[in-house]
Picture 1 (cartoon, rainbow, N blue to C red):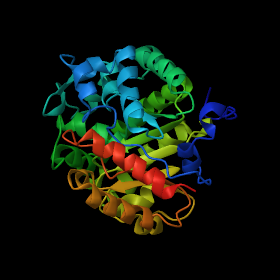
Picture 2 (picture 1 turned 45 degrees about the horizontal axis):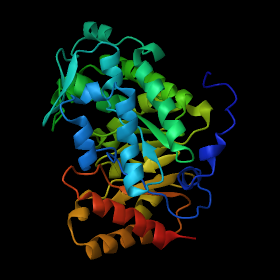
Picture 3 (picture 1 turned 180 degrees about the vertical axis):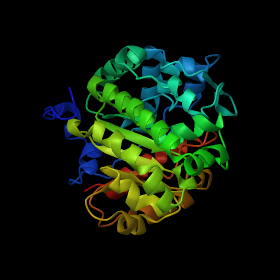
Length: 354
């Protein structure tokens, strides 16, 4: 199906879920909750099934992906599952020589620094990621009325890994290309937007009920640079999946100054990290968008009373917002007590029951 065709009839099993209703800014029975990096990280059962299996390999085993994705749904009673994968999976699938090194992150063997290097970025086809289609099929049958969120890394964040050759705190190579060779930069992001859009389409067509675009590192940019050098590629990704009628979520870290622009790029739901209160985020984003967030993940290391007090602050700040999906302001930290997450879900559900 192309993005221009009539959107399909929504899958009735998940259509009336609290999560999708909140994304559509409709009344909900309770504020829905899910967590970024909920699929694993802090769970002992996750560590057990992943033992001895490298990250990228684990993303390519449909039965393992299914089990890992379901674990937090079973344990925490969250309102949505997030597909277990990694943002570099589509890059690996098209032949980029990279690996995820424990304790480091994605490392690229041949960083993209010249126009000739763009040849590494070929189109992504469904055949390249057949394991994704298979895993989503398995998952949607298991999940029933619980929505599955598909996801992808945004063009800027993928470009930052590809140009730097790995994680970076300063993005000096990526920014040098963005400022010094804007045409090459624009072509790089445009190619990545094509790949990312294709990856999200594959997930939606396989059965994902919503998608999230992670622009994890875009908070490193000033608003004017974002608008000029990044936003066109993000717009292209969101437009690629607009015709499917599934909610599109956009999230980045340290993006307080970019929230309005990230909504403008085409998101239906704007993810907010913990640095900006939700009522202020709503003012920056403007009407017509749902918000997602935004408890500081480190709060979960405090007492239950402290967690509940900070959660209450988040819920109070969300009062009057048309659609609110409760989440952390970034991913679950690996040493988080899983029981703290379970208690948090129950607290939000109880406090917001309508």
